[in-house]
Image (cartoon, rainbow, N blue to C red):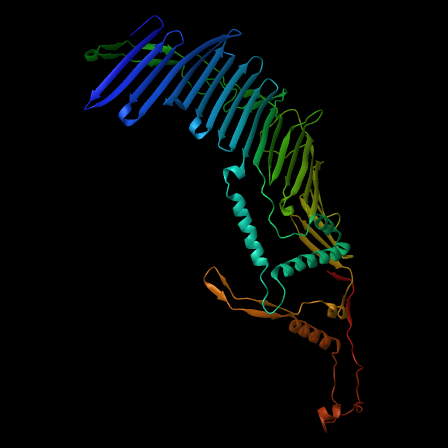
Length: 578
C-alpha cells in the first residue's frame, strides 16, 4: 500500500503453523524508514527505525541520522550522528550511543573552526551506572603559538557501586582490633597497649631530639599519634586532571650558510661533458624506432654555500595537575629563548605532591639560565669556542623531614671556565661547596663539606689538581671535641621482658616461642660498664717475677704501685686527619 506521504510494504510468512510478519514503512516527508519483525510463537517483536534529519539554522546546514532499536516498543539501543560543514572553515561531527537497559550512554563531539586561527575541540563523555567520565581536548594554532590542552574528570559513587565495601571496611577494622586486643604471653598487657605506648615513647624521644637536632622540627610538627583506626571511606572517588602544552614561536630568524662540496667549481672543471649522444634504436618487431640525436647539456656552477633561514628557539611550557581523594600532584616545566640584548636561555621546573601520608609529600622547584655572547657568523668547523657565557641553576627540594637547596653558577670568560656548586641541607645542618676551574690546561677541583649536629661539627676538605705534568690530591678532616659519659648509660630505661609467641613465616618456616629478657641484657650492659669503670692494672713484685736474677751495673728496683683508675667519662679532643 502506498500514498503520497508514506510507502508501506508488508510480508507475511507461514510454515507449519509458524507465522512471521515483517513490515517496512518509509515516510517521504520525514525521511524515516521503519522496520518491524513479529514472531508471536517465539515472543519476538523487534523494530528498527532509521531517520535522516536535515536542518538549516543561521545559514549553516546540518545533517543527521538516527537509528532506534526497540523490543515491544521499549527502546534498547539508540545511535545518533550529526555533522555540519560550512565554507570549509566550520565543521562539526557528533556521535551518540544510548543503551537504556544498561543505563549507559556515551557521546563524542568534534568541532573545527578556521578563521585567522585554527581551533579544534574534542569532547568525550561516558556515563555508566554510578560512574561518569568526561574528557575535553583542545588544540589552538595561530601565528604566535601552538597550544594543546587536555582535561578529564572521573567520579565514582563507591558506596553505591560496591554496596559491600562498607562491610569489608568494618571487617578489616575488626580484624585489626582483634589482633591488637590479644594479650601478650606472660603479661597482663594487650598488644594495643604496647603499640600505643611505643608510639608515645617515640614521640617523647623525638621531642628530646628535636631540641638538639633542629632539622627534626619539620618531622615533629607533621607527625601525629595514630588511634590505630582505618580512615573513613569517602562517598565518592574522583580524579581530576588538567594538562597543557604550549609553544610560543620566535619571530626572529637566523641565517645559516652550509659549505657545499666542490663549491665554486664549474661543470667544465668537473669534466662533465657538454653533449650526450643517443644512438639509433630500431626494433621493427615491436614497432619501436628512435632516431639518433645529440642532447646539449648546459654548463653550470656549484655555489660555494647553501643559505638557509631557520627560526630561533621559542618558549616551551608544559604542565600537569592531578587531584584525587588520596593524592594530588602538580608539575610544570618551561624553557626556551629569553633573549633581549644577548643570547639568553632559561629553564624553570616545579613539582609538588600532597598526600595524607607525609612521606609521600614533597616539593621540588628550580631554575636554570644560560647566557652568552658569540660572533654573528656561525662556523661548523671544529674550533675552540671563542666568546663568553654564563649559566645559573637553582634547585629547591622539600620533604616533610628534609629541605635541600642547590645553586650552581658557571662562567666562561677569557678562556677560563669556573663552575661553583653550593648545597645546603636542612638550614645549614649540612653544607657543601664545590669549585671547579679550568685554565691554561690545568683542572682544579676544591670541595668543602661541613656537617653540624647536637652542637658539634665535622669538616672535610678535598682538593684535586690535574695538569699535563702533575696531579695533586689533598684530603683534610676536622671534628670538634665530644664527650661520652658512661655514668649516664646506667639511666637507660628498658622494659623487663617481652614474650614472642610461636609464628609461621610464609606458611613454611615455624619460629618457636621465645622470651626477650631485657633485665638480663641491661645487667650485662651494666656489668661491662662497671668493668670498664673499675678497670685496674696490677703489677706483681719484681722479686717474684725475676727471682734471684741480677742485672749488673743497675740499682735494685724499688716497689712499683699504680693508683686506682676510675673511668667515668671519655673525652676526645678535636682531631685533624691530614
